[in-house]
Length: 67
Image (cartoon, one colour):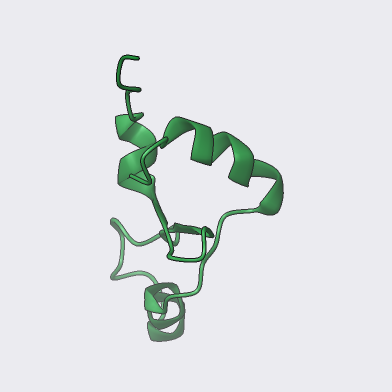
């Protein structure tokens, strides 16, 4: 049986936790940070952003070996 390919775009955006949850990075952290408040930047830095339950199955299919 051949190996399955991991979707590279999904691997960059998501990671799987030990319990199988799909963790994602928070949006609005790339550029134009000077215009954003300290509160906006700090809250997006905190961990705990998980992918929606409806998308979880699709993301796991794109990352067959857990990213």
